[in-house]
Structure formats: C-alpha cells, structure tokens
Image (cartoon, rainbow, N blue to C red):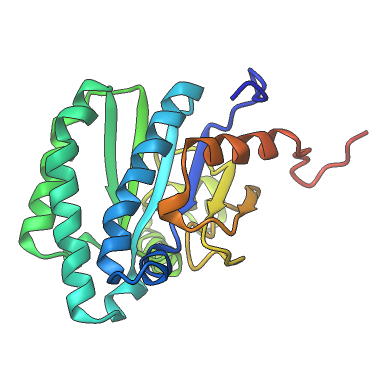
Length: 240
C-alpha cells in the first residue's frame, strides 16, 4: 500500500471474479468449495477499497450465461449468496457500506431475491462504499433493454430521436447512478470481458492476472491499483 499515490485513486473498480472452480479442482475439492473460499477474497477487496477511499466497487457475481451451468452448481451458488448476505449483514451496516444489485433479478428464486431486497433496504442510507452486485447480469441484455425503453419513449413522444445521446443511454442502464468504470480487474488468467459492463468500461483500464479468485488478496488488489496509477489515461486525446 505504501506505493499507492494519493489523489489518483479510481472512483469505480469492477471485478470479474474468475477461477473459483479451477482453484477447488487443484486441491481435489468440488467447485462449490472454491466459491465458498472466494467470499474471503470479496471481503478483502471490500476492506481494501474502504482503506483507499474507493467509492464504487462492482462485482460480477452471476452472469446470465451462468444459468446454463449444472443445476446443482447454480443451486449451490444461490445458497451461498443467501448465506453470505445473512452472515455479512451486520458487517456491511457497521462499515457504512451501501449494497446495490442489478441484473435480471426476476430470474432469481424467491429466497435469494428476498435476501437481496432486505440487504438493499438495510444499507440504503450508507455512503462510505457502494458495493454493486451484478447478478443474473449480461451487458448485451442490458443494452437491449435500454434500447427498447428509449424506443418506446421515442414512439410516445417522450424523447425526441434527435436528442438521443450518451446521457440518454446512461439513464436507461442498470448503472445509471454510477460513474463509468475506471479499472476492470479479472482474475483467473483469462483475458476477456465476458459480456460485463460493455458500455461502462469503454475507457476503463483493464488488468488481467493469473491469480485464481480465492487466492486474490488485499495485497493483490493494491498491486492492481498501483498498476492503474502508472498508466496514462488519455480518453482518445494525445498527451501533449
């Protein structure tokens, strides 16, 4: 942490938490064991974000494509989600963390949906860190949803076609209240974005690491931030 520069901290960090299943397989355990241990890395990244003053942390918890996984694994993931929310509720409130959830939440079963609604309500007035959970989320689906909503408003003369711009699109995304992503981290050795926040990461710095998610700790998060701080962000401009 000593190498991190003050005043050049990303406002919004997003993480694709990859490698849980492979981590478990390496030690002869079932995939669910990897997901369980991955929750420790979530806590470390939350704590690190608070220490650095990062205001927005978005985690790719469960994609729309993840529904295609074996039913027993999906069920285990949902059970883990419910357990983690219940277990971490007091800590989230104590540490002034606001939980936001976005995605196709109508796809969730009753119990996880109720637990998510409960934690959102319980933390709605917190403001130290926005912890954003992307659940049953896919960026292409999000964009299709936004285009449909804008099209309906154009058809009903609520929005003029001439006025459609980035701001209008942003207002119809799940992340409408969040700043664009500054840093996207992906663990697990893969170098792709997997349908995650395609619009929001247009100018994000991408950081890929071979570390499997359950092994990704606070020091690794700090290393990603140091790497981010060494980059020159030009947003299409030149550095002169």
